[in-house]
Length: 296
Ligand code: NAD
Image (cartoon, rainbow, N blue to C red; front, top):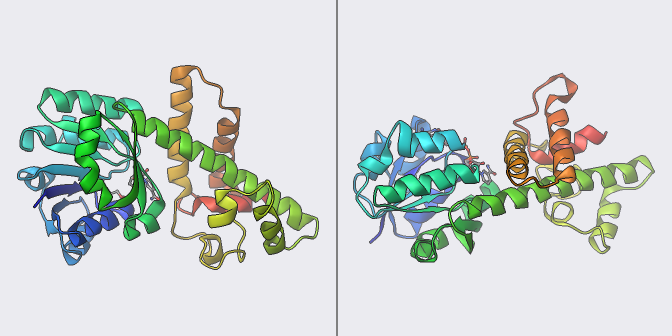
């Protein structure tokens, strides 16, 4: 039986670790927050008091952490997990970080005898709980193939984008496009409403027309159009504005590194930043479809 150490049991990691345990993996879990460890135990994982203890005996490590500096600090600079895990451990970092963070992780990990894959995800909290995430992997073909059984327990689509860091590049491109079509969808819906249309009727029309897109169909930002959307429950839960801003920041960094023009991505980043600070309160914790409010 494969033993997986899981580091970072937050909104995403909690559901992912639970799915691994459900599918028969032995899961050795660690998070800084005790309440997340208590929940992990209820979900069939074994809780440890430190990350070093958790990775001591394992075949693979999966991490789902907030950002690149935390990921580097956990594996390399502070907790030094690469020095605490058995040689040849397969390390799957599923956090969204800069490609450079993933490349450093892979280089240092390989020097220490580990196999390292960046495997950021698309799908959000509901897909993490349901085990239907999409994984975008960066690493050698052999290491990505070795990761498939573990990733398949948490997701339904597994892609290899290329070598180390390539998974992050794919994730950054995807989320930049998501931000653009979410903002565009909110803009079009508000224009229709301001000119007398019912947002439900307008959505139905655009869904069968050339404006159809994922944000309109699955994540409609106008309250009341979709029964189970974040918009219909006051923009709570889902994917936070702050996380979208983090991903758009990564897109800006990537564009600087490659001298690429991203005028739409830059506009989207500015819109989400304006939205976060609009109305005299920090809207960073709201679901990102609340960008609709900026157009009202
Ligand atoms: P979260 O803040 O809910 O969870 C992160 C967890 O990491 C927390 O439980 C925190 O206590 C733990 N943590 C932080 N530092 C730690 C350390 N040094 N050692 C151990 N645990 C530590 O965040 P999340 O929403 O689960 O997101 C995690 C990652 O997934 C991020 O990189 C995010 O960009 C990405 N992501 C999130 C979503 C989403 O919808 N939330 C979707 C796709 C990707």
